[in-house]
Length: 152
Image 1 (cartoon, one colour):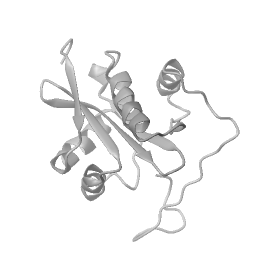
Image 2 (spheres, one colour):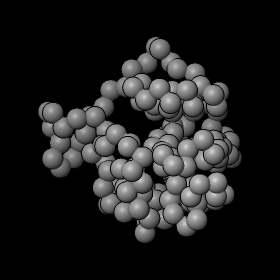
Image 3 (cartoon, helix red, strand yellow):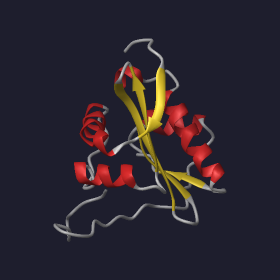
Image 4 (tube, helix red, strand yellow):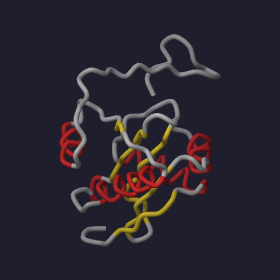
């Protein structure tokens, strides 16, 4: 994969298992929604811009962009470690931003883990600023949820 070019495409339901493998290999923090059925649902959602990067036919990165009618949100920007620093993350974010612009989204938030300094540096480098006024609160709902079900 070293030095190979990449392509960006939409995620398809049949990519679900490979996406989960990518997230594990890229050491993305696990979440309650890390399941094949959830990836299939996300890949099938027409309003969600779920894009993947491929290098030599293998998944190298992912990102999701959703619009809730008020603000665009970017989730799961992940690049396989050996594919980092090649512009893949920028290309994935650029694809989501184009999707948002076409939908007339004017404000975008990105969920970024504070304890991943490389991620914080990336988002700053592409023009996003931390919002010290906000904190993220999460709750898992549905089967198996309840106190202690953790963030996601």
